[in-house]
Length: 350
Ligand SMILES: [Zn+2]
Image (tube, rainbow, N blue to C red; front, side, top):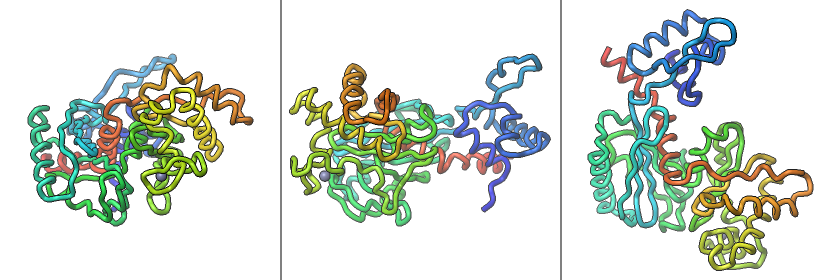
């Protein structure tokens, strides 16, 4: 279905934050009268608001516009081995509330019933009106086939070919499900823009690849499964059955066991190989990435030994989202997928 002009403006503002009416006209190749008319309608519906003015460069200052943060919200849900995390984000994708409950995952009717209760409790505690929720994103630790709407496989949670309609059945709003590391990768997009690899260093290792502002999924939705690239041939046994996977060397547990020096050697080798493939920034996230600051210089120095092509190793960056990265990324996926439902809602009340 063709997008309406209001929808196009809305989508532009979702990713573009604040801009002037002239910016909107330029970016969407629309005439100024068309932009003025539609912006006025969106402001009347409480969806857009003015937020200051551009710095004057001689002429008149132009007023900046942005989405009205309070006009609607989305949920981000992070399914883990032992617990479920919830966040509420506003229309700008900024975190508003967060919480979590102990709820070890089981693919059983009882688990989904308890999940539904936990969600309602989160909404109650955070005083979120369910009718304000436009949709939700779920972060799930497994390979997600979005075409068939199923989890292809999750080693960690022990499920295969699990339909995603199970979640939709217990939620009163539309939901989209993505791989957990892809969610964390997506949560970095606003700060990074463009292209980068996200390396998630948690109890299991994952990753995501953002190319020109789009998450690269691959032919079989496994792009960015960095944890199972072989780092040390014939090395430690990985839970996937192979030997020497990065997963066995780059987790926080491996850091504890091997010590910082050896761990950083392994990480440097891995990082330089990833850089060689795509020649883009590399963001280090997860538990280790969130605390990498003090070791960053040492890591860059070690990486320089493997990288003969780059003078300064300035492409290794610490993640900017530390806590709630997966849930917040999932919420922002939900915003992209369902944010424009707000326009339908305002049409109905006109
Ligand atoms: Zn493996």
